[in-house]
Image (cartoon, rainbow, N blue to C red):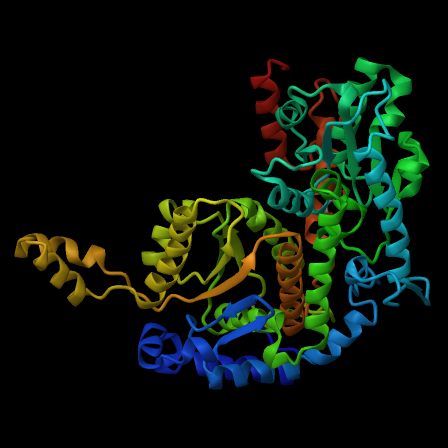
Length: 558
Ligand code: F6P
């Protein structure tokens, strides 16, 4: 479970955690909860109305001490200070990770190191662009800015991939789903798939549609292909001169944006110190503001900033991102859990697991340490999830009784934004029931007694009882807050961002690069020309060549 050790202090801390995991009580959860009614109180941590209940894990004072020793060995305090000082914590790309500046007030003075040397006032730069965005959003909403034919915009299509899609998508959905007060109807187009393109524009009136091309690099193949398709669609319907009025660009690559023909007033920029998966707070979040309204976008930023300040200032032992991260490291490294489940009991958060997959797995799915040596420990688990309760009727069977222990994060707002009180109590009851079922399980004696009480025969009990046993001692964290609104959503997403950064620090890896995705991009660039019939481009290998031949044969192209 724990690989080569290049850092003696950190390695010793991981080894100590492994020793703690070997204790007989290391995996016991149900018995601890039953024996210690105060446990929920002691192991629940809070920031205002947001609570993180870790009582349904096997964490105890001894394990927490071991985890804090790891934090000390990894110099988590120093990492936090360097992160907020805008140091180049993204070492392989020589960049700061200063997404916090995007949500800080403009006069906060957060600075970001520049690759060329020196630093810049990231808060001020972000604030100035935010002012431009606010003015643009107001002009669209008030009908001062209209399409080429003078129609008001009613629909906005965000074209972007990865962080230029998932973050804005989860936030827009969370703030508009089922509400009648959305300012514009938002759609999202990410995949390089004509079916996705067709779905994104289905039923739309070009004269009333605004496209946002969201791409940090403005080179992403999928986004460029879809942007070209959208451009053609507008040009065919409204004429080439109409294009400028219907497109906005959100990017760091202002040269490429200019080449696309988007007028400078409709270009919103950000800097390299914003990673793609942290860009929803930047101009990439424009779709959120256009759909949900500026005030909600600002509240989203405010919520994230509240979490930033908590993460920066709170002692480690009361720090929500740190505690969530430590619990994750205990499960991943000491107990060997390879998978992690996120269950938001809120339909509005149905895309949250997808966003967290990128935030977590693109950040920490690494195997080398900052110095290029093998990482000292196993890193990011596989993240998956669906909204509760729907998940209960699909994969939760495996989480309850499957061979692997899969820690779960439950997420629940106490107060919904609808008036179906019993439905919400039902939703909450199910979340709590799942957490209890995972923790306590149901032993065979209880199952047998229940079946006997229900009048089952001894033969039937012998046959069925073992299959009905739930082992219990399956860990979960429970996040609860008052209401899902823009502020609490921003706080929640920032909580996970910082959790991931803390884990990256503990594992000694670069959480802010993503070199693993580059190889496939590079290969696709070479394979696409080889797919054209008659092309003399060679496939990179025989297996790909055979697949290309099959693809072309099925299409009748050879
Ligand atoms: O391929 C991965 C990635 O680089 C992500 O990190 C990023 O969010 C996504 O692609 C989209 O990149 P861009 O915003 O530059 O189009």
